[in-house]
Length: 196
Image (cartoon, helix red, strand yellow):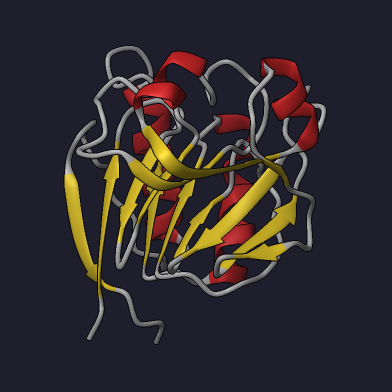
């Protein structure tokens, strides 16, 4: 049975290790364990992409995928992604993120990363990472009820300043019958990578 390992690296950055190493939204407070094979960027906001972090997390053969507007804004070499694209076993979904030129949610190796979106399409995922703004709790819950991941993990908050946001979403998700928990920055979680 394939194993899936995920680490929240702070902000919205998630490291996914299966048969390959994927880094989503390279703006972190805890460094990745190793350079990524694939880097995915959801949108251009500076709490989702830091060019210095992206450079440190890549090796010469690393492939970078991001919305065209993000690649252009930062002058990054990579492949532009639009909703509906599928590449290297990754599915891309167009989603709305506050004041973003374009935003993409990704499903990669059983992991859904929703960017800043509160509404995203139905898909299947082993684990889902979502933002946790209190004014959107009901929309996050509604979206996660469609996805029905084995686990939901809130991201995009500062544990020092906004732990209440993440705890509040975990409570709302559990009330709706979904499994949810927090990860500390750098904490590793191992799951079976097989969808039920």
